[in-house]
Each structure stands twice: as C-alpha cells, then as structure tokens.
Amino acid sequence: MIANLVQLAAGEEQSPLVPPGPELLVGTIAFAIVFFFLAKKLLPNINRVLEERREAIEGGMEKAEAAQVEAQSVLEQYRAQLAEARHEAARLRQEATEQGAAIIAEMRAEGQRQREEIVAAGHAQIEADRKAAASALRQDVGQLATDLAGKLVGESLEDHARQSRVIDRFLDELEEKAEAAR
Image 1: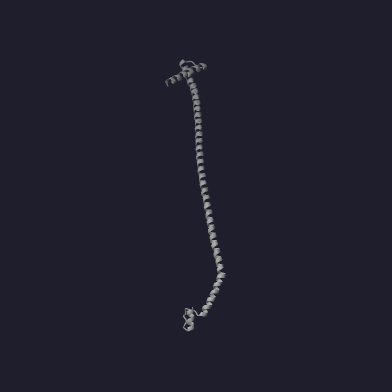
Image 2: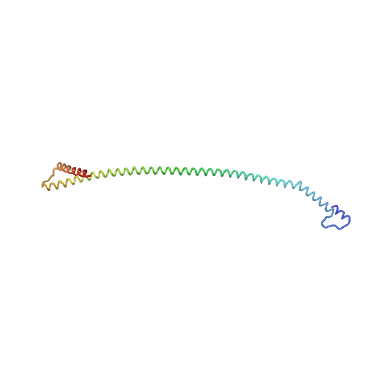
C-alpha cells in the first residue's frame, strides 16, 4: 500500500490490480462499518438461530433416544405377552388333550357298560326264549307222544294228569341221557 502511494506520488502509471488510495481508504472504512454491523447485529442473530437449531437437533436426538428406549420397552412387553400367550395356549392344549382323554375313557367305560347290559339282556332273553321253546316243545312232544301211544294202544289217553306225568318222566330221561353223553 505504501508502495502504491509512492508510485502515485512518483507519477508512475498505476497497476490495474491496485486500487487508488482514496478508494482503498473508503473501501476499508466501508468494510469496517459492514464488519461492525455484521458483528453487532447480524452475527448474534445467526448465532441465536444456530443455537436454537443445535438445541432442536439435540432435543430431537434426545426424543429419538427416549422413543427408542420406549420402543424397546414396548417390544420387551410384547415379547413377554407373546411368551405368556404361547404358554397359555400350550396349557390350554394340554388341558384339552387331558379332557379329551378323560372323555374318551368315560365313553369307553360307558360303552363297555352298555355292551355288558346288552349282552346280559341278550343272555336273559335267550334263556327266556330257550325255556319258552323247551316248554312249547315239551307240550308238543307230549301231545305227539300221547297221540302216538293212543294209536298204538288203540285207546285215547286223555287223562291230563297221567299224560303230564308220563311226558315229564320221558323228557327227564332224555335230558339225563343227553347230560350223560356230554
């Protein structure tokens, strides 16, 4: 700068890159005013906005961390509830299996009881039918034997008491022979 002033005083031609002295002085004063204005007015506003942004970002990060912690807590609760639900489902399945087995056993016992009742009733019915058939057969055989004996003898054997005794004796002898043959 001093070299420029010296050149100007010497009357030398000034370089296009170096501004004239008064312009340099006005430019420096203008720069100082702008710098002072920026430093006193604009820079605090910029710093305040930057500080608010930093606080907002840090607050957002804190909120995000809090949300992440809360989400992790909710996830753990969900996992615990899911594990509990699975345990409950397994317990219910086990109970259902046990109840099903109990019902099946109960139904089998009931079926066995009913089968035994049916078999007993069938045996009783068969025995009753056998006795009825034996009685009817005894009467029919007795009647046939009486008719045959009457034809052989040539007389009617109508005396019922005698007829019953003869028939009973005859059938008893047949039964004894059948039992002896076994």
